[in-house]
Image 1: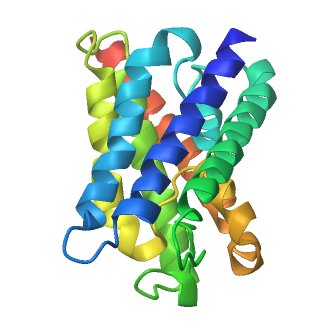
Image 2: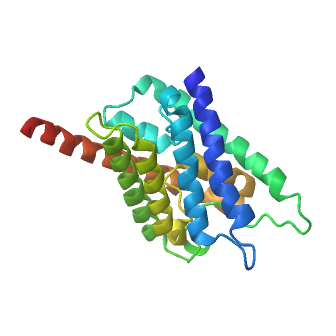
Image 3: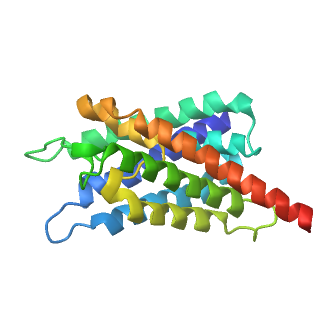
Length: 231
């Protein structure tokens, strides 16, 4: 139970920190943090939570990560459903808190509310195919980094740094394409408050990250086992 609560709190922090940076701080004229600031915010949420709860729950914060780690032989299938429920719950709570904060300013307009999208709802109008490919590849690389950084043969204690910086880089690449998901819970947590198009396009931000997560984990498992056999 403690690990499920940890996942709820951790995913809450990821969505509040990352999406909060996008909604509250990115677009302020003259002083907004822009894409780089939002990318750093997402990376910092994972970095801080990995140190805070990594020893309790593994700090997945992401259904695609949990499923990918299962595919890579690092996580039991019996815990998948509770972890995913905890992650989505934490994300939706964070979306609600962020809505309460953001709506507390005069002239508030919900807008995209940091939702992920493609076509007309992509930040730079990228197509559905471009969004699908981007999310699959970025999530695959994220799981590849996670699997490698947490390998028993990797330098001890540095995994949160590698994973946090990896997520920052992923956002720097893909915010213009999809506003960066690589995390179905993160996408759901804000989409439910936007409704309409954000919910209609949410399928892509579940399917693509899960497919990418499995591919990345399986790829790492393959090269790691080959290396072990050669040594």
